[in-house]
Image (cartoon, rainbow, N blue to C red; front, side, top):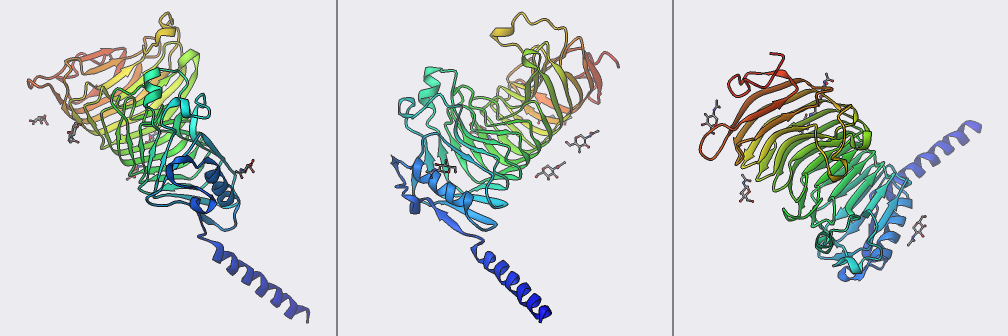
Length: 395
Ligand SMILES: *[C@@H]1O[C@H](CO)[C@@H](O)[C@H](O)[C@H]1NC(C)=O
Ligand SMILES: *[C@@H]1O[C@H](CO)[C@@H](O)[C@H](O)[C@H]1NC(C)=O
Ligand SMILES: *[C@@H]1O[C@H](CO)[C@@H](O)[C@H](O)[C@H]1NC(C)=O
Ligand SMILES: *[C@@H]1O[C@H](CO)[C@@H](O)[C@H](O)[C@H]1NC(C)=O
Ligand SMILES: *[C@@H]1O[C@H](CO)[C@@H](O)[C@H](O)[C@H]1NC(C)=O
């Protein structure tokens, strides 16, 4: 008898597992939570309620749906996990817009417009657009401006397909996340819009960004301190300020960046291409960073290491220490620049740049001439012996 009870119990457990299976794949449509989706009505409350239901709901894969042909007007909203499931999908088929100008924001002092914190397994997909309506912020040049999409401590994050337009500040910020994949997205803002970085990454590990278009007013991608194992492939950048490691070491910061690989990217009409910038007075290191197979179309500073990066507050910074730069590769750069001084390796006299490799550099100016190379305190090697002849002091 006891044996058959045990079997019954097992069958019961099995059945309840199967039932759980049925609530997998559950959809939570924002329209069912009172969202109007007309782009005029404030849908923030409905969106938060839909999020609460999705985040707290049962099942392993739940979807918060923003349907096609609807536009949600959102005030600053913060979504916090952890959620009950291992994965949450936000299916963005429709659009999201910010209030049309700064005065219409409920609180424009926020650093973030739409933020996610400690949500693991978050997937943001769809062909929808997120419009930050940033122009009123840009014009007023206020210092505090919100980032459009901010992710903090979101491990196993995936973002794909979406378009972000006119963010007040960064389009996307990734902070303290592990295992991130971002692909097939478009980040768009005018060339002259201030501080509209495409993707800012800090304190994160295993970040893959590939096959995306970034046309914006500041860095296409900025890799800040605390990052390791960052893989960037097939990004079309420009206009914009290129793909930057840094700025690192501000106010004596101990910066740590390692294992960064940027491959098969295009810099089209950008102010910079591959850039590493550090402030004088910093500490720590930036090492094992490679830029390979890079196409340049009229890129102003295609290759630049700047260890004397200063903003107005730190003009007096003494160079008593610096973020140590080592194991850096620039390999396979081809295309055009309008700038005679296209290649600059301006390293710290304290730490020098060590183990720099420059191979297959074929950059030309409009008149067909080769640009100049400026080097300071660099140790390394190159197969391009004519171009790089005066660069390395250890040769
Ligand atoms: C959503 O959930 C949070 C946290 O449980 C709660 O503070 C908030 O009031 C909820 N908001 C709505 C609109 O249900
Ligand atoms: C970098 O990403 C590309 C594209 O996703 C992939 O093919 C490649 O294997 C990755 N490299 C590393 C070292 O993870
Ligand atoms: C350098 O970084 C790459 C990833 O970008 C990694 O595969 C490789 O192992 C690293 N090399 C060293 C010596 O750490
Ligand atoms: C480079 O940018 C220009 C101007 O935005 C654009 O017309 C052109 O198609 C781009 N070239 C490539 C190869 O993407
Ligand atoms: C450098 O690029 C120019 C223009 O594309 C090309 O004509 C030339 O053959 C290239 N040189 C090398 C060494 O690859």
